[in-house]
Each structure stands twice: as structure tokens, then as C-alpha cells.
Amino acid sequence: ETGVTQSPTHLIKTRGQQVTLRCSSQSGHNTVSWYQQALGQGPQFIFQYYREEENGRGNFPPRFSGLQFPNYSSELNVNALELDDSALYLCASSRASGEQFFGPGTRLTVL
Amino acid sequence: KQEVTQIPAALSVPEGENLVLNCSFTDSAIYNLQWFRQDPGKGLTSLLLIQSSQREQTSGRLNASLDKSSGRSTLYIAASQPGDSATYLCAVGSGNTPLVFGKGTRLSVIA
Image 1 (cartoon, chains in turn blue, orange):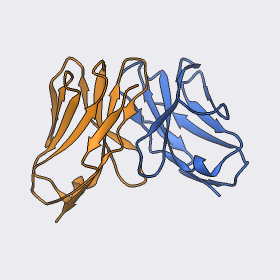
Image 2 (cartoon, helix red, strand yellow):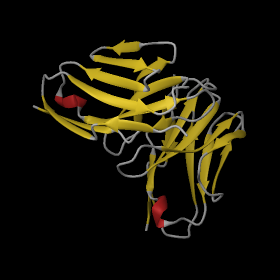
Image 3 (cartoon, chains in turn red, green):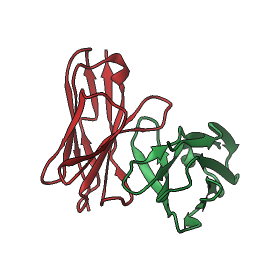
Image 4 (spheres, each protein chain N blue to C red):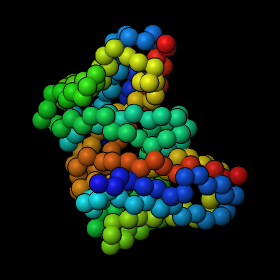
């Protein structure tokens, strides 16, 4: 059984640029959740996708958007990057409301 | 709004000591509670999942308890080892709502 994978591992962007982060969910999981973790903080919920539809959103502006594909993999897109977007972005997959399994994360640095 | 607090924020213990990490949450209407381990700059590794109907879960040297009525959970680590050094995160889930995390406890086990 393949675990949750994320790409890229690290990314450096400048303010105003756009970024796309990718996540492959664990086999058999139809739900993907994205979290942002700033240094020294717990992860904060961005949004969740269930069967290709957005199924909940945290307190993040519209420049954070996402997609889920028929194979349940997912993308997180962030437009007009700001310095405060620098963080570890975590993806988690699950079966509906079951236990969530996290990927290794993508470290985004915005200069 | 659910809030999760973890005490202490940091803990340093000598190798071999038993220790307890604490987690409290404000809304007792939870579906489950998960304890995670996070190594620096890495993703989250699920340690234990306790369903709301359960009182505790055990895995090896780890034991997690849940008292929904008082809004508390503890993670007990027996015979600590230097390899246990990491940040431990507690998160509560409420069905289809996303996980709400505490800020974590940073544990250092000194050889």
C-alpha cells in the first residue's frame, strides 16, 4: 500500500508569484485535506476535497485554491504569494471522516 | 469554535524516564482524537487514534487516554529513548470537520 506523497519537497518563490503543490493520496482514500503549518505552530486547515468537490474551507483567502482529480490526487494553488505564505504545506488523505494520513510536506519559502 | 491546548510546550527528560504529555480541548463533541509525531521539517506520523467511544489506545511504549467529558487526553511514553525526541501534536476531529491541532509539545530525551 503506497502512502501519501507530496511534490516538490522544497520550493523557493518570490512575492507575487504563483505556486502549485501536488499530493497523491493513499490507495483507497477518497478525501484529501490540505494544511498550512507555520514555524512553531500546529497545522491550520486550508480546505478539504471529497470526490473532486470542495468539502470545507478554513480561514484562508480565495488566492488559495485547489483541485482533486478522478484518481483522488490533489493540487493546492496559491496566487500572488506573500511573505507570510512561507510555511510547511501538508496534505492528508483519508476515507471520508476516518483517520487521516499525512504526507511528508512541501516546504515553501517566499522571498 | 474548537480550541486545542498542549502542555507543556517543551520538555527535556533523561533517557529511561516515563513521561506524560497533556492535551485539552474546549468542545467535548468530538469524533476522534489523534496523536502525531513530527520530526524537524518533516510531515506528521500518526501514533495513536482514539475514537470518541474509547477510553485509551496502546501501541508499544505509548499509551493514550481520552476523557471526553473533561476535554482531556494524555500521551504516556514509557522508558523514553533519545529516538523519541520530536514534537508531539494532538488533534481532534469532529466527523466531517477538519482536524484541529494544538501547537505541540517539543520533547528532548537526553542520553
